[in-house]
Length: 97
Image 1 (cartoon, rainbow, N blue to C red):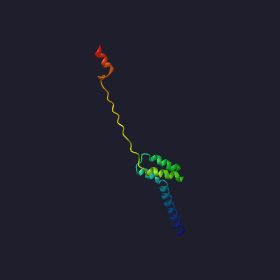
Image 2 (tube, rainbow, N blue to C red):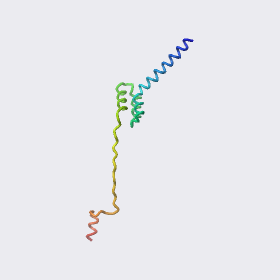
Image 3 (cartoon, helix red, strand yellow):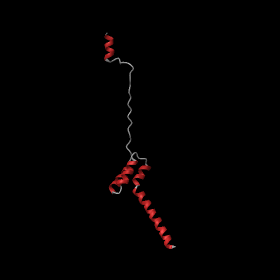
Image 4 (spheres, one colour):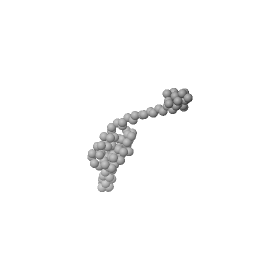
């Protein structure tokens, strides 16, 4: 009976270590999604495929913790006149004739 309990306890401890290890490995992706980063999917992909190398994991962690760049809104106003303006060549030529 003690062997059975010891075996179950070993499996539970192993599962806990695996869950904690996977969570630590995916920490940059988790941070990216929690912070609602614009590139959270890219952080996840970098973390999944290259996170095993310490350099890429650190890059993903830094990327996940930095602030997104503020987007600038550009407003273009188009003013369309219904007819020729008073300074155009067409209006000047019609006045001469």
